[in-house]
Image (tube, rainbow, N blue to C red; front, side, top):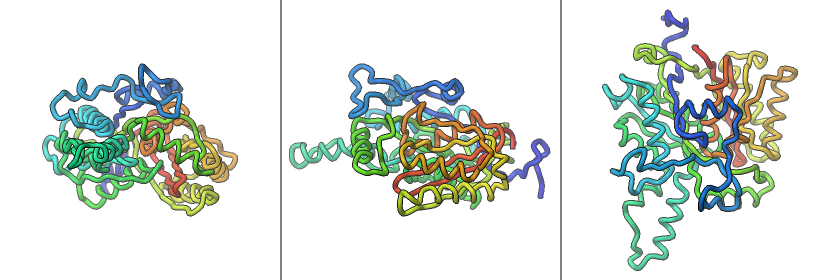
Length: 370
């Protein structure tokens, strides 16, 4: 087996060689890294006439104007989630430089996670179909916003990415699931590079749906304000990254996903997922340099914390708790956790996520040059 003369790693190792975000800290990886590094809270009260639903604060992207960023052409009917994804993909592609999508657009795929797509678009379109004059006049240009794969498809069209295009929805661990799906595409030879991550928009409609869901179940206690944003990563082989002059930021070493049928079983599920991910990565618990848990709060968060405490014993690696800084970003939460791991990690990092609907996942990254 040949190895890279620069890093000593197998050139087929899958690495993150670029990333970007649209977050409550603003647009771009630099804004996110500065906010997380400074431990700065980006959750704010309502600005102007913004309606935050039942919440007094939210982690919203400041001054996000899709027409000012992307132009007026093609954006009239674009929903917020799609605009965030298209914008973040553009920033990532620009930072990646040449040799990504320009020469062979069919070699670059996209895997984008989402919660429900655009909740506001779905509810607005349904409302118009019920209230409009017969025969139920609606704006047909708005219909594409109601389907879950709108953001992924529009991002690929906008940036001419003609490789595999996939939408993933899996609750809080969605970002980890998207990363794992992207790795499978690469390992099976379906493409050469993948933009992967997740997006979630803030809207009054989503705020009320989340609030009602949380207050209607003991396992979904309110855990603070909501957030929004998009985080995308460029995943490719180490050899391809080196060939195009991109510096590997982290290698994907292990992952595991476990389902559980009752909230009381979440602790065992988290422990098993984390243990098996570390085993796959050939990393001992005492060698983990940083933990980035989902920090969901309430009974579920307590079970996640207890599982990690059991696993690590007397070893207490530092924990980066992101949700208190940016809010509950829904399906984009785990992608922001991965981004935070890239900014703060130096060595093996364990990222865990757990969702009250019964999904948990764990990913091990070796941050720094693999």
